[in-house]
Figure 1 (cartoon, rainbow, N blue to C red):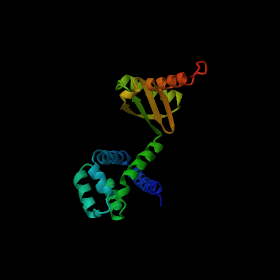
Figure 2: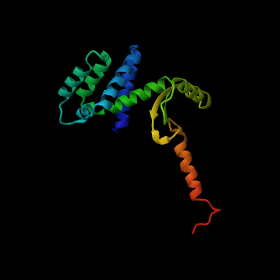
Figure 3: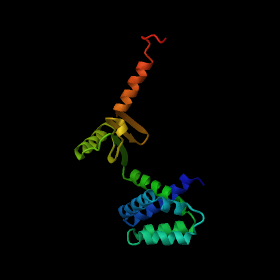
Figure 4: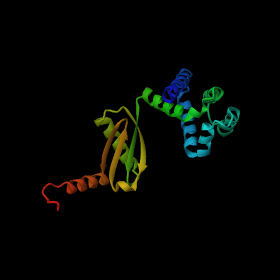
Length: 186
C-alpha cells in the first residue's frame, strides 16, 4: 500500500472519530502541535522514522513529550500507530489529516511571499480579494518573507501561483532584451 493511501486512511479514521465525538477542533490542535514538534526537532522526527528504536520506547517518549497537552483521542490514535508499527508514517498522516480537515471545512491554505512582512490590514485585503476574485470560501493565509523578491508578492494555493514580484518582472525584462529581434547580434 502506498504511503499516501495509508496516510489518507488513518487520517480519515481519526477525523471521523473526532467529528463523531465532537472534538474535531481539539484533535486538529493536537495534530498541529505534533506537526510543529516534528518540524522543529529533527531528532524527534528521526526517532519516529527509525526502525532501530522499539515502538515501546517511541511511545514512552511521545507520552512524556505530549502528556497533558493532547487529547485522549490523539493519544489512543498514536498508541494504535505504535502498536501496528506505523509510527514512521505519523508526519504524513498529520499532513493528510490537516488537508482533509481543510477540505471538510472549505478552507483553502494560501501562502503569500513578500520581501517585507505584511501588516494585518494588508493581509485582510489579500484575503478579501482572494475571496472575491478566486471564489474561495475560507482562506488560511500563511506569510513568508523572501528578500530576493525585491518587492511585490507571490501567491500560492492549490495548484495555482500568481507571481507579481519585482524579481520576476526583472527576469522577464532581461529575457526580452536578450531576445530582441531589432538589435543585431554580432
